[in-house]
Amino acid sequence: MKREKITAAIGENAGPWDVVIIGGGATGVGCAVDAATRGFSVLLLEQHDFGKGTSSRSTKLVHGGVRYLRQGDISLVREALRERGTLLKNAPDLVSEQQFLIPCYGVLDKLFYGVGMKLYNMLSGRYAMKRSRIVSRAEAIELAPTAVTKGLSGGVVYYDGRFDDTRLLIGLVQTAAAQGAVLLNYARVTGITRDPSGRATGVSFVDVETGAEVSVSARTVINATGVFTDPVRKMTEASAEPILKFAQGIHIVVDGRFLGSRTSIMIPKTSDGRVLFCIPWYGHTLIGTTDTPVATAELEPRALASEIEFLIENASRYLSGKPTIDDVLSVFAGIRPLIANAADEKTSSISRSHDIYVDAAGLITVTGGKWTTYRRMAEDAINKAIRVGGLEVRECVTESAAIQFDAGPAGGPRLHQRLDYTEDDVIRAVRTEMARSVEDVLARRTRALFLDAAAAIEMAPRVAAIMATELEFDDEWVRRQIDEFSTLAREYLIRSNDVLRLDAD
Image 1 (cartoon, rainbow, N blue to C red):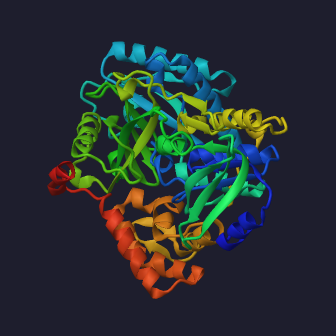
Image 2 (image 1 turned 180 degrees about the horizontal axis):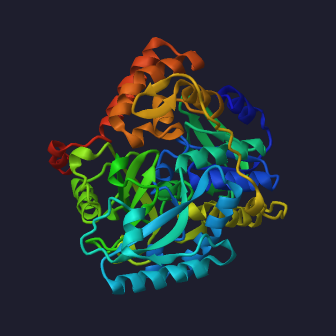
Image 3 (image 1 turned 90 degrees about the horizontal axis):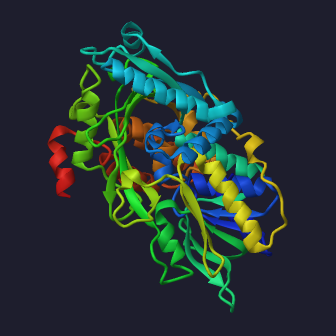
């Protein structure tokens, strides 16, 4: 997957691509897999790196959504549970079953959540995992030894899916490429070309690395840009009204001792009515998430002090270790693209269902949704592309198509004593996973930045040196990469004396 071969393949394609996809997150790459496995010619263009935005910043759950069940969005929960089952079958090395405990501090809580999780199981149908069950106080303490025990009456155990979002995304990139799709990161789309009748006939983009301007023709163009959906829609319809609202969700990562178990904790009651998760993740504890309305979407959003304090406060009510701000190893934020149908809706109550729009130019926009339902979103988008572009009707096969995964154990010296990543991880990221920067390696091919930002900063010089050797870049590139990554990574660090600075900015 060398970049030179990819750009050459784009230049050599004289005829129109069946499908050109703008956006390299879960939905866009899912569309590439779907279209390529149907035998269509596919080009995907991503302005930054695959999964740079929302797709790398999830709660790491493949789930139906317990909160959506409580809100009564039964159709979304049922669809997501079906897709959870499909992912477990198609990507067993990337998606696994995860046990959860809902700690209960009263008999009525046990009955309420016990019934709720039974319904959750029923909605799973033939895709169900292990059955949920009510457990005693003693078993609850055994499963979650760091849970607050005062007033604990027992709990409810249930099962959902867990994954590493960008590792799955890279697996999807490799799967699409193996099926003949051409995918290029650091390719910023600058315009959508149209014929005299106004119909979309292709796109223009800039190769960010070389500055080369390229135009390609297409039978269909799909806008799968997530939170940047509306600006792309304006490329064909300048007066297009926004269809999205944005909600920011943040996560904090602390040491694994705060959970002290392989069992995740689902906190059912927080001060804003949401649920909260404490999840074991690569030897650490991931705590999230929030739901904060924001006016605009940014490629690198920043956590607010109030969000960090919210997570710490609510987690401390259930974890006996009571994490503080000084225990946070990394904090990261992501923006959710939400389809807004009412001006006064709270973002937390807006459905996570997806939708597809086709404008007068034939631009297909797929947006909304959630990571778990990416495959279904892609299937719907390619079905629409077949109709809009007059493509040959071919059935979707992704429900039974295995997702490629060749990232076996990597050897070589470790890059940092606090993390398990090695020099071979860097080499593989460059040679087979299209990593082009230190950030690509430390944020998305490994998860070092998200696990321990200080360790990631310390790893950057060695990573840059290895990449420079592999890519034949000079010392100036190395210095620039170290500076750029260190500046970025410091935004993932938080200490008690920094909290007010975050909100002030």
